[in-house]
Each structure stands twice: as structure tokens, then as C-alpha cells.
Length: 340
Ligand code: NAI
Image 1 (cartoon, rainbow, N blue to C red):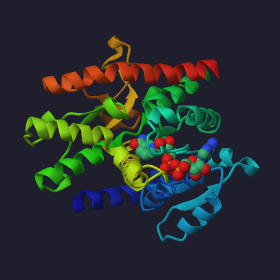
Image 2 (image 1 turned 90 degrees about the vertical axis):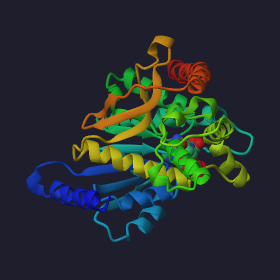
Image 3 (image 1 turned 30 degrees about the vertical axis):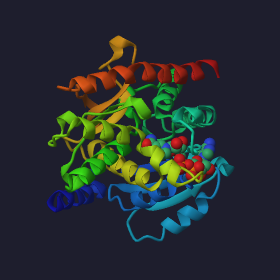
Image 4 (image 1 turned 135 degrees about the vertical axis):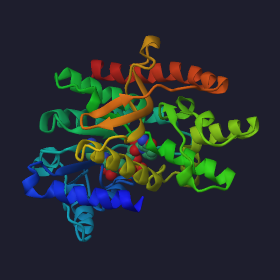
């Protein structure tokens, strides 16, 4: 691990040297003053592949940016608010745009309950990306991700700049949780527990493929673990008692995803695989055009979309339950853009 990191830093140094003739990576965070946005921006400040960190929110980003900018890593940090064409400056020349803007859940809410507020926020930010950074890669965190990625896609299609390889729904937190939860019951180190989580990012659409892990589980363990991975977000919403949903673990997960994407698109590293929610043909024959599965990242963004591989009858059942829900979430997002 240490050796790999060292190589990355060396490659990064070469990358940033002007003789390499490549542009350095600007990463924009939209919703940067929020519960996820702040710790995510902090973690991104540590990323050696980022030369410019652009923090946008409707409030408070000048303060967040001033604070983070004192950290002694190389990147330049700037905060933008809507005044003085802030969004335009925040987005221009961005390599990656990460979007955690929008409202989070309160106890008793599903992610779909956030649709009415977040759909228009995400639509408008996607329209700004079309205008100011049409070639950027977008990582969508705002919920409901099952619908917000289709929303972003429809906005890009409307303007004739759609490239599905550049648009991602971030489901990394489900993978991070799954790894941690397995390690907790098996008494192992989570770094050795890799769980592929497929489907979408809400309740029954979250399908962990536990049969593909190195562990064996009893039927009881399987059911409990699956439920915990599907509804892990609720544990946090409940514990935060009305003050929000997962922010710190989400920031960790989004920073990991952004780093993986940077290594693929900027450094051209091969073999980087992240489960993520993308435009996918895996279940398009069943009318489900977006699906999370293992995706090999490439310089173009989405590289190879891996098939699910061999799954257990229990997992087949879970996929069966996920598909109709996903289909309806996707349609809801698409219809929103068509009608608004
Ligand atoms: P938060 O309310 O703490 O922060 C959201 C930020 O977005 C606020 O600072 C707000 O001012 C900003 N914002 C609102 N409208 C905006 C606009 N038009 N342009 C730019 N910024 C805008 O919420 P939190 O906890 O950071 O969550 C953000 C979103 O992430 C929620 O939708 C939540 O459900 C989602 N989420 C997604 C997860 C995933 O795994 N994909 C996990 C956890 C949360």
C-alpha cells in the first residue's frame, strides 16, 4: 500500500511539472458548506492530484475556503457563492464536479422523500455544468441518487452534450459500510473485506453480493447483514435525531471515489474498480437503464462495466426486488426533466 502511494505521488509530481504538458486537475464541490461538503473538501485538500479546489455553495463557502486554504498542501482553494457569477467561476475548467448539494433526510424519511427539493437543485447545477464545464466528470451524491443521476443525464441530453461515461452516481458509502459491517461480525480488518454492492442507492435497491466475499455466513447472518447494509443510513439518521444523515462517512467515501476517478482519468492508471451507479446495459432489457455494479474506471471515465458474475438464489431474489423500484425511481427523474 505504502509503495503504491509513493508511486502515485511520484507520478503526480511528474504530472504537475509543466514539461508533462497536461492540465492539472481542478475539482469543484457544489454544496461545499454542508455536512458532507465541508469534510469532503477537507479530505480533498490532502489529494496530491488536485491542483485547484473550487468550493461552491449558496452560503458560507468563503469562510470554509479560507479555513481549508491554510492547510499546507499544494492545491489552491477558492470559495464561491452565487453573487458575481460564482457558479460560473466555480465550474469553469473543472475536471471533476462533485455534487453533495441539497437537503438530507430526517428520521422517518426515505431518500425518495427528498425528491421534491433536491431534483430542482440537481437539475439547475447540471445545467450550469453543461454551460461552464461540459467536458467535466460529474459525481452525484445528492439523494435520491437513483433519480438524480437520470436527472443530470437528461439535462445533458437536452443540451446535446451527453456522455454517459462521464456521469456517476456515488454509491461508495454502501461499499464502505458493507466492508465495515462484515469485519465487525467476523472480527477481521475491514481492509481485507471487499464487498461488491450493486443495484442502486436506497433501501431494497442496495444489493450486497455477500456470496462473492471470502467469508461464509449463516442464513441468519446473511439476512441481518443484508438488511443492515441496505438500511445502514437509517442508523445514522436516527442517531442524529433530526440534525441530518451520514456526512463524515459519506465524505470519506466520496473522497475515495474522487481519488479513484482522478487516478484513472488524470494518471491513466488501469485496474481501478469502483462499484458505482451509471448508465448500464446490464438490465436494460428489463427497462432499467441505470445500475450500480463494479466499474473499471478509465481515462474516459466509465471503462468496463463488469457483469454481476455468479450470484446466489437469495441475491437473485434481492435483484428481483430492486429492479421495479429502480425502474420507477429512474422514470421519476426522467419525467421531472421532461416536465420541468
Ligand atoms: P446539508 O444540508 O448539510 O448540506 C447541503 C448543502 O447544500 C448546504 O450547505 C446547502 O446550502 C447546499 N445547497 C443547497 N442548495 C444548493 C444549490 N442550489 N447550490 C449549491 N449548494 C446548495 O446536507 P448533507 O448532509 O451534506 O447532504 C447533502 C446530500 O447528500 C443530501 O441530499 C443527502 O441525502 C445526500 N447523501 C448522499 C449519500 C450517498 O451515499 N450518495 C449519503 C449521505 C447523504
